[in-house]
Image (cartoon, rainbow, N blue to C red; front, top):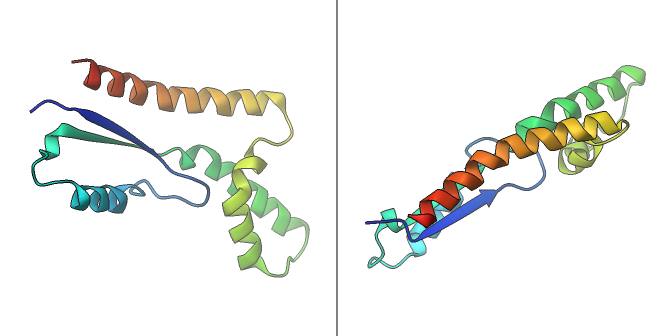
Length: 119
């Protein structure tokens, strides 16, 4: 059976692991009619968290090195939830480098999705 639908799954903010989409895919598949072949739907999880995570970790370590911070778990949570914005701070060059990394990550996935539905 040929693929009829391609679903891109892109995670949100936070400290996300590469298997972030597994449970979602299982839940969606459980809701699909038994008349629909599993091969009719292609899921494409796109994990990009590893691109900004090192920058967030560096920021957190630098902040802790400057002062002994209180509420470390809360600070870690906030940085994890909102840290993608922190990754884009300071330099135009860093923003361009991150944007290029995202494009290199997304391009093959989008091309693959297009080729799947085109056939």
